[in-house]
Length: 198
Image 1 (cartoon, rainbow, N blue to C red):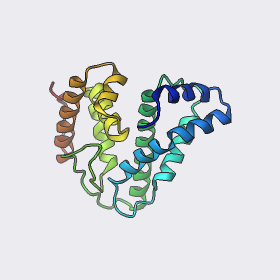
Image 2: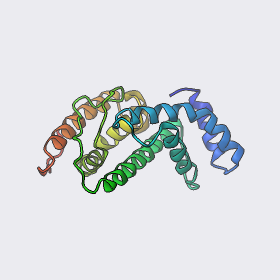
Image 3: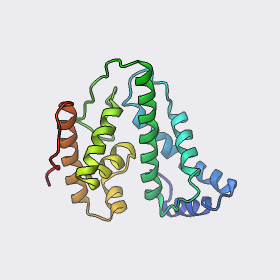
Image 4: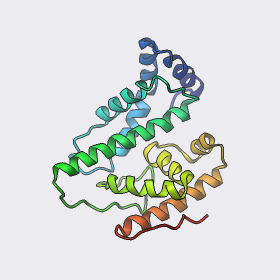
């Protein structure tokens, strides 16, 4: 993510006033970051995906700015919420696509090398969303780290700052959560009620 974090934080606070000009200035500053994030997420989708990065950015931005009660603490907080919204948009899109297929077989999610830089395609986002929901019940922090890293594109350092924990803790939880998700998604019919180990 680019630009001066202090400048973005000031713009976020100004945009909260509801002035359309402040929202416009904010969009100009964060647009490229959101577009990179959206493109990164969509690289994991199947070829010919009907949702394009620009459409994803615009939908996410509309949802972000329509939250009149939101008080953005800083740039990382904003992108944390943006990652959650992008996740919801992609899940909703995947569910809609799957319902149109009328129960067509879904391709399995490969999470072995789950990483922001990964170029994997054809992720089953619905299965990932369900698994993240289960993980959130077992370990909310690990689920939040996966969401921030995978959907939000935040670095280990940015996540540590956002959650006010050390980078070693984030790195450890990220590795544990990936292993748990890999196991969970490799065996879709098996119940997993054990919390991921530390």
